[in-house]
Amino acid sequence: MLYGIVAAITALFLAAVLAALLRVPALRLGLLDRRQRQRRVPLFGGAAVALATCLVAVAGDWTGIAPLGDGIEVLLVAGGAVAALGLVADVWRLNARFLVVGTAAAAAFVVPYGDTGAVAAVAGVGWITFVALAFRSLDHADGVAGTVAVVTAFGVAACAAVEVMDGLAVLLSVFAAALTGFLMHNWPPARVALGACGSLFAGFLLAAAAVIARAGHDPVAGSGVLFALTAVGVADVVLVVLSRRLARRPLLRGASDHLAHRLRRLGLTAQGVTVLLGVAAFAAVLVGVLVHAGWVDVRAVSWVAGGALVVVLGMLRVAVYGPPRARGRRARRAGRTGRVGRAGRPAPRPAPRPAPRPAPRPGSGAASVYAPRRQSEDPAHHPEPGVRRAGRSVSPQVNASLRVRNG
Image 1 (cartoon, rainbow, N blue to C red):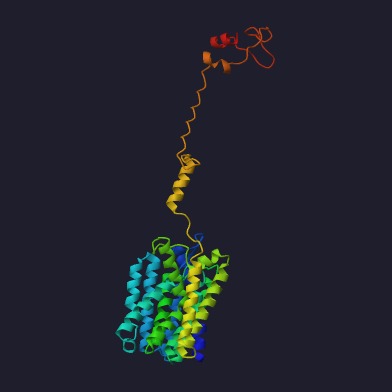
Image 2: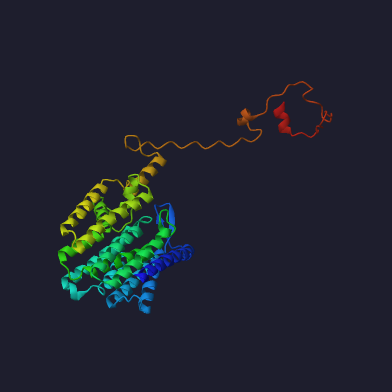
């Protein structure tokens, strides 16, 4: 018990320090994540969470104070491999198929085949991959993925404690503490982001731990518990897929159509959105823990599923897509050139402006308009050559054309 408290405090401060330190190289290398198209948040926060979790867990296992066990050691190694894959994706922007294949390969090493059977094991691999990518999708706003992951980690740790899996419970407690330290920098407005490294690591570790904790139980009840523990991430993925399919948009093209984006359009603040989704995750996780412990019937999961369905259908009514860009460009171009009339018909092209007439040369007949005024014939205005005027002298050599023009 004492070691668990010390390990959690160590992981919290270590993750907070690493997140602050790794923020500087992320800024210098340009590894940034755009938030709401207005500001960029440096990545490597996920690397801080993964490093803090692995270092503290390995230290406890190596000293023998809190041995993890063979299965948990494999889980930690596989989670580290997924985090490394996500870090590569943050640096070089890997294709989504590489993330799917790599996460599925890592999940194949952690599923307990002896306790689940072949069919359930394959389903478990698919579920772990799906939840890892769901948390990757949930990292679309400041603080959302970290808050939901902390709540889920405590819930899965409670399920592991019910099954007397002390090593798994300690690992998840350390992970939750590391995420809490990371949230010191990720709370809106965030100074650092999880990125693919941290979000994939979080989703993989939580889903794999839940599958291990539920191994050997009823598959139907186990499916309900797994869904309840990750209901917020699943609802976000379903919402995005349905919304883009209905709007006939590409599934893999990013857009501001996630849960947090739609809640912001309804008028909630960034902090309010994070708190609301954290509360929703807590309610769903609580139901999953109670069902796993046998204190509540499995039919309680239907309330979680019904609530998630209502949220998805309600959020679909929030408009998030603007007009197509091609139409907007054509309209702007037509408005600039004046080719589109009020009735939608092509407007007549305006006549070109006449070129400015060049200034006439002095003495030309066509430039009488620009000629100086005709002066008086009074000798006072035309002094004799060589007569000095007050203030100036008149040269006797005058241009003939100028004399003729002046009369």
